[in-house]
Image 1 (cartoon, rainbow, N blue to C red):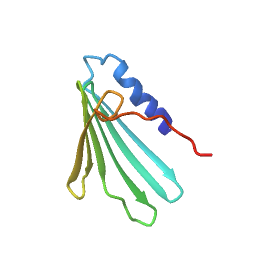
Image 2: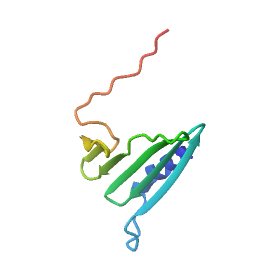
Image 3: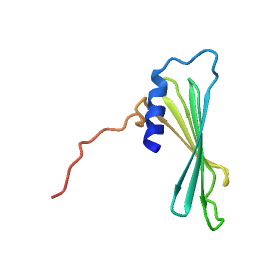
Image 4: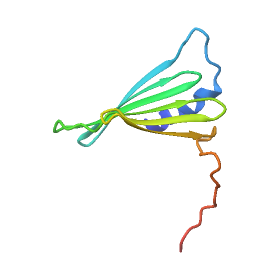
Length: 110
């Protein structure tokens, strides 16, 4: 299911937005053993917001988290802990790589 969502999210920027649609909301829930993850995604032509929270069957919950990506000449990315009221901000290029970061080839150990 997550692969399908990643594929949908990667294809969304390639599609011309319909002028009559302001955005898309996608809600998914994944259950693995005793953990349930609920994720809500909001997609528009210029931004992407993803909110998620983990729930355990014994009643415990993880912190509510969110990511916002504002698209432009560079992408501004915000990762937020909604419970602690803290966030991290960064900029990336269109491939999600921080500007000025040098790529190095992968080396395998024997």
